[in-house]
Each structure stands twice: as structure tokens, then as C-alpha cells.
Length: 123
Image 1 (cartoon, one colour):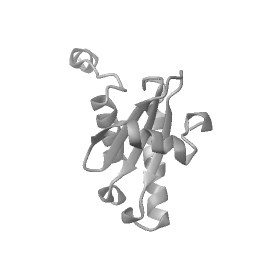
Image 2: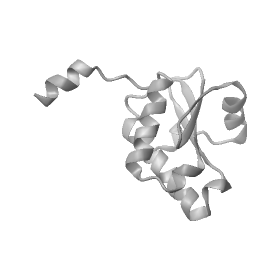
Image 3: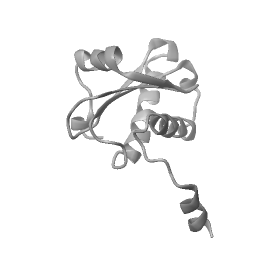
Image 4: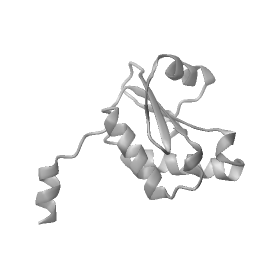
């Protein structure tokens, strides 16, 4: 993912934490705040409760990849922070991917698929 889509400073994360709204999932927490620009930026947080550095880095890579796959469809103009929960340490990519999609849809940052469209494509 391009660095222009990343939250960098601690103050940027703090603004999302203080002013943003949050949604939770058993694997992840999503916090977002409107940034007033034409670009959405993302941050990924994995605390020491998740595991040692190798496991924390793996969790960040999985979250980053799940967001990268959806980057074109995610609503513009938001600062978004994903926070991994302890259960994310053992999770496979599919579970993290589904959690990211679920949270983005609940936050209305990702389009909800039309069930009639998926029915037509499966026929």
C-alpha cells in the first residue's frame, strides 16, 4: 500500500482515537474520523498482548493486505485505524479479510453488495 494512504504521526492516530467513532469485531476494532480531504488514510495497531514482534507484524501485514484489496472501493475522506485483538494472533487471512470487510460495511465506508446482483452472477 502506498505511503500516501498511511497515518504517520502519533497526533494523527490520537485525533482518530479522541474524535472518531468505533465498531468492534471479535478479531479487530475499527475507529474512523472524517479527515476533510479527498484521500482515506489507514493506520494499523497491534499491541503487545497479541504476541511477540513476529506475530504482531504478521497481524499488521494481514490487515494491510485486506485493506489494500479494497482500496478502490473504500469511501474517500476518512482516517481509519484498525486495532488487532488478541484473537487475531491465531487467525488466518480469510478471517481477517472477512473482519475488515464486515467492519468497513458496518461503518458505511465500503459499499454493501446487492444480493440480487450476486444471484444473477451465480446463474
